[in-house]
Length: 340
Image 1 (tube, rainbow, N blue to C red):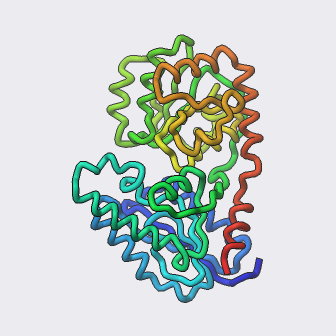
Image 2: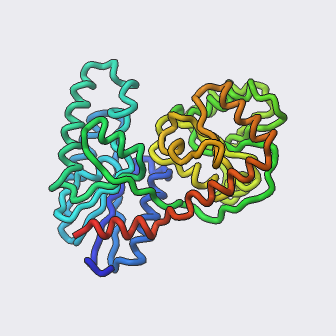
Image 3: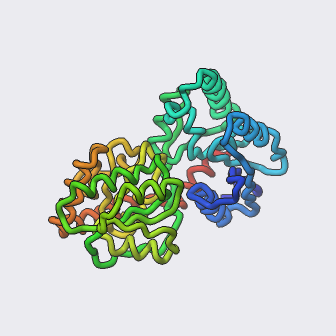
């Protein structure tokens, strides 16, 4: 490379210090740029979205950052793209979704309509030239969302996988469903689907979250549904490896590493047609299924996996082939070419 000597990657971090997908994404981006650029800094900015005032404060903090010592800057999720630098490229994970596609959750307050307008004006200016030299997104879902809400175009650029060591084991009679137990992940859909499943197959749910107790209550005494709680990385890989299939049924997901981890483990994926980027990766009946978000339809595909295990195995292999060209090397080279 050699275009410049110093690069800052701006990452907003949770005030709680919790580690999630975004933190791992930033770390991988940093590690891969370190292979090519002499001096790379991962600049972490604590941000909070609990209130509208917190959101605006985050934008102001990023705007006030002194980045003059760096030759180039790459921002990511809101509000990091508020930074000021003449050589700034944004690799957007997402904006503040509660004011975009999830606005129905807060639209009952008339004040939030005006707040949304202000946020849209800010994002439109910050994500456009000259404030942002070039804008990439992590996928088509984010690109389409930006275009729909604020009329800003961006280039989809799928990130590489953030974990390693996945492998294909011998499929057992269970569907694996890892991830955060949050309402946007719709784990409840799969629990409800199990009521209609006719096959002797189990649903193993991994992860923690604020919906844990409600989901356990929904599952009731159904012995086919198991909550695994927190798992180590080695345990997660093992559950992927030995699953018959992987379920991932979120609402309009920005990207969805779970699908990629499943494919790396040679497992087919069951998602929903409105699940965002994961649904865009599905070739129906080739590497998995994208179902209508109805328990009865999801149950049909669960039964299909059980009754057609050889087909399920082949779907998993097809999925692995579908993502083999998605690499961090390609991401780094593309972002670097966009910088001055």
